Length: 207
Image 1 (cartoon, one colour):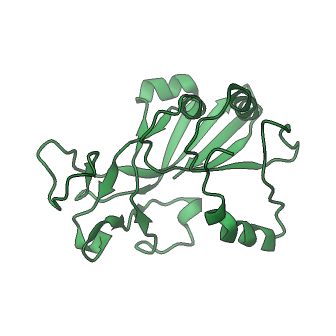
Image 2: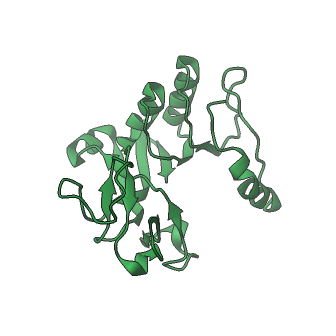
Image 3: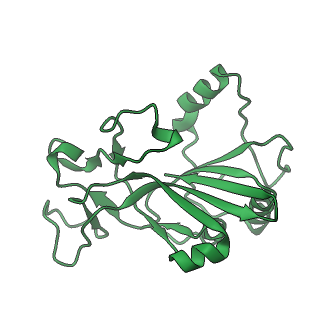
């Protein structure tokens, strides 16, 4: 109910159901979390959560719930969405990662990038160079001290190459990075494991 990309998730939903995994839509305004909810999937919200929904998600996190989160560039401020992400010390940038390494992009299209894959359970069966991302935002994190205070440990999954740059103003048509545009490798997918209580942890995997 927040402008999510639900229709685009239909194929992923079918794959999960083929593996005999229960998948269901969840309306947090009218229902509580199912007791057997192993993973909450949040797919690119474009409208903010209500306070009630936010409180339910935070309670789910504090009880050791896990989240798989997909996001486009955050071009509008979604206060409650960010409140949930702040639990893990992460936010989504408002720009687009553009590539200049010809081996790391589709020919002539800097915003179709082939990210570098880190050694991780998520990527162990995927060949490097076979994931293509379109108009990818970057992930931004609190500093190490703040992450430690939050009880969060970060592990990289995907990042752009050292030859990429970050463009916030999409009206610029130049295929060369401007002097003021940030250059380098940018995190695109990350695992964030948060300790909650003495014997629980909550895991966020965010793309």
